[in-house]
Length: 291
Image (cartoon, rainbow, N blue to C red; front, side, top):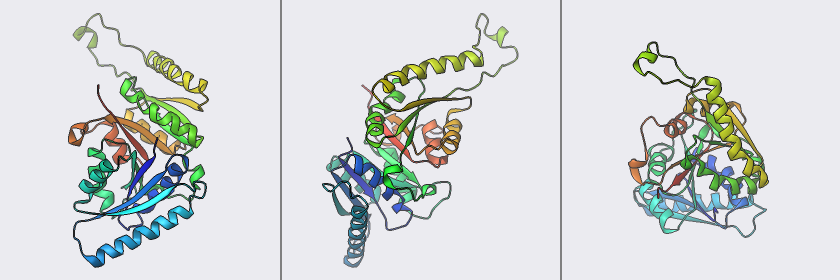
C-alpha cells in the first residue's frame, strides 16, 4: 500500500513534526522510507551539513521503528527548487506517499512548511499526508492514529477515500469515522411565489437522508471487521469538519481531490482548501483520477 514513503525535511523542528507519523505509517506498511532535502544553492559545505543532518535523522527514526527490522531508511539530497525537485523525485521513485509538515494554527517559520508544502499539495498526483505544527504530541507511533475522519458528501469521489483508508485502518487498528455535514434549510421569504410547486425538505428529512446514506456506507465496512461509526453535523462542511476534528479526538482527516496536476485541482474557497488552511489535524489528501 504505502511501500515507499518520501519525507521532505529542511532541518527545522517544524519539519520534523512529521517523524512520529512516518514511524506510525512505516511500521504498518512500508519497506522503504526516504528522507529528502533540497537546496537551490549548492556548496560543498552546505551539502555536507544537509547530508549529515539527514543521516543523523534517519538513524534516530530507525531507532524508533524497532518492530520493522526489514524497513530500509535512506536519504537523498536534491539540488534545485525544493517543491519541483521533491515532486520529480517522488515520481522517479514511484513513491506511494509523501509526508510533509505544514503551517498549523500555531504558525511556524520554516520555509518548507510554507509555500513549498502548498506547491507539493497542489501539484502532487500521489497521496500527501500534511501534518500541522500544532500536532506535536508525545504519543507512541503505535497509538498515534486511532480515529480517522472521512468526510462524505454522497459522491463517488468522496467515497474513493475509503479504498485507501479501509486497509490503513485495518493495519493500524484504527476506527473510521464517517462524517457528513448538512446545512440547515434557510427559508427565503417569497420563495413559494418565485418557485411554485417546489417543496423544500425539512431539516429532519435532510438529516434522516444523511443517516440512511452513512448507514449504507458503514454496514459493509463493519461486516469486513473495520471499526466504524457515523457522525452528522448541521453546519457548513468545512467548519463542521474542523470543529468536530478538534473536539472529537480525531487523529487524522482523509479527503479526496481530483487527480489533476497543478492548480486545476484547486477551487478557491473549497471545503478541502479550507480544512487544509484552517484545521489543526493532519490531513491525508488522496487524488482520485477521473475516468
